[in-house]
Length: 362
Image (cartoon, rainbow, N blue to C red; front, side):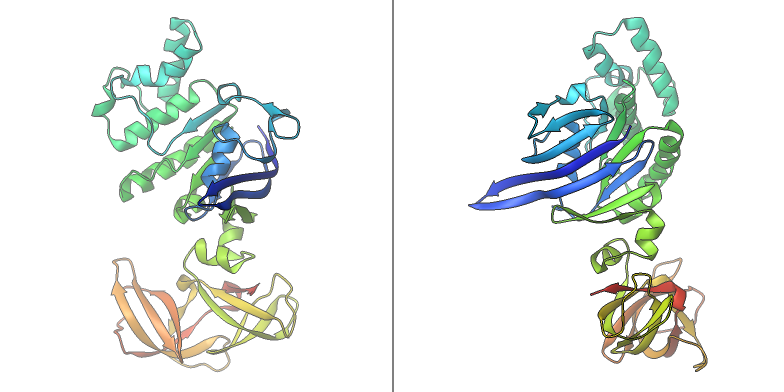
C-alpha cells in the first residue's frame, strides 16, 4: 500500500517558543517497501510515524494511504487510527502481562467482535508466521525479550493490516539478540509483501533492514535513498557522518575530470569521486570511511592518495584495531587488520582508493 505525505508540518509550543517537529515534509513510500526513518533524537521521525498512524494531529498538510486521504487540514478529514488499516509495534511492545500469548495476539480481533473460531484460526496462522507455534498458552511474563517482540509483531499482523509500522522495536534487546532479530525481521518482512515503516536512530538497523532510508534532521528529510547510496555516496556531510563513521576533510577543489576531482586539503591533495559535479574553486568536503584507509609499507609516488602519519589512540576490539592517524594537525580514524604488528607512535604510510572516497559540498 502506497503512502503519500504532502507538506506535513507539526508545531509544538514550549516556553514561549514555537518548535517545528515536522517542517513541510513531502514523501512517497512505495508499496511493498521496507522504509526506514533514521535520525537523531528529536529529529521528528517518531512524530512523523505517529502522524501516519493517527496518534498525532499535524498543523498543515495531507496524508494518504492508498487512494484514501486519512488526514487533511485543508479538507477537514480525520480518519481515526483504528480505521486506517494499520498495524503498529511499539518500542515497549505493550504486551499485557496478565494475558497469555493467545489472548495478547487475538485481542485486536476480539475488539472487532470476530467469531471465536475465526479468531482461533487467525491467531494460529499468525503465530506460525512468527515462529511461536505452541506458545499459545504461555504467560507473557515468561517470555524472553525476543519472544515478546514476536508477540507484539504477531498482534500487529493478525488483523492483516495494509501497512505495519515499527517505533524502535529492538532498542530494549541486548546487542546479540538485536543482531539476530533484525536478520529475522528483514527476512520476515521481505516475504510478507506489505509496506513497512521503521523508525530508528541505529544506523546498523537502518542499513540491514531497509529498501529505502530517509535521514531526518530538525523536522526535515535531509536525504533519501537505498542503503548503499546513503552509505557510499551520500549528498550531505551530515548524512555521511550520521550513517556511519566517516573522516570529513575540508578543502578547495583544484582540478576536475569526468568522474573525479582533486581537493587541496591540510594533509595534501586528495583525489576522489565527484558524482555531485562540483567545480574548480568550490569549497568541498572529502568523505573517507575508516574501513577504506589501508596501511602501506612503502611510499610509492606513482600511486594516488598516499600519506605519511603517526599512529595514535590504538585500540584492539577483537576483529580489528581501531586507531587515529595524525597527519600534520589532522586525525584520520581507521580500522586495521588484527594481525598487523603496529603500536602507538609508529610512523606509517596510509592509502585509499579514489573510488572509495567521495566529495560533498561544504
